[in-house]
Length: 429
Image (cartoon, rainbow, N blue to C red):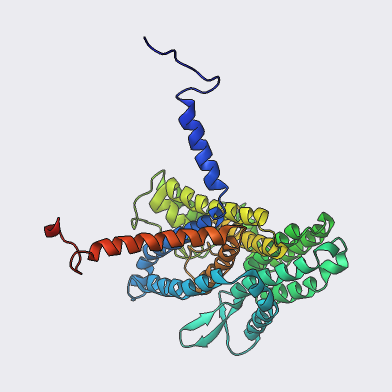
């Protein structure tokens, strides 16, 4: 005699595993350490991808210049090794530490930016935003000003959050500080970096709760920057080149974008293969820098470009999680500023490559070659990772997982050396 089968309403054998899977995903998503692992994972993958693509895209130009094909790659790897300890240290500092260093950091950033008016200044392609600190060592102070301004805005706007409905409390002291930093960048004729600062400030003000009417002023300021850019024939040509036709002149305006689009088009779905780009053979200017996304599309195809977009999307999602989950206003505002800087800059760079945005000279964060940009971005991401570690329950969860790992290593090590004080070998089995 068989027992009667009992079927619960709405639950069959096929729905139970799916429900369990959904519950598992939900529990992982709601975990206190999700933001931390998303930030660390996406940052690491973008950094590795960047090093690989810098090697691939720069080797031909390096050989043509009579240098080692690994020259640019080794420089970029060196910058990454310099940025890594800064990133780790930044990820260990609590929010209170950033409150204490916010004002000194901004002062140092402004001082470094002022050095562009001294004999230390170095001009590149019409921009005067680099300084020389010794033979072969130049830095771009504006990149580190982004980090300092993001933290400073977080501290100042958080303290005045209840008063931000009044434009006077928004303007003082944020207005003069932002004006000085962005003004110095504009004096150096670096429009692209100035626009990134606008995104950074807009993100901070929005999350701080500044009324939308004040954003009208920011929009007017942005329009002013564009007007200044259009005041010179070269920059006006760059802006209007996106509406123009093709050009075969390598010195012509719009040539870079044309070659970038050809690189993306020739890559197809899966790409021509890593290292097999044709555009990097001195056809595409700045292949390892501002237009490295085009080389990614050519060598790794649509899949490679979607991977880059996915990784930046993961960074953005992680930062939104931190903004929503962290209780401290300073953390929320600083994270928003850094997020709008990094994600916004990535979208602008990609927009330039695909011809939607004029060529304004901003690199792809973590991917393009460039020491100051890479180190500053890693430092900023380290700050956000520290905020992810400071989410409610995150430190305890990370400490518990670290303890489990240490115990597991101890158990494995003890079993290995248990037999006569020597490691086990195949002869012992």
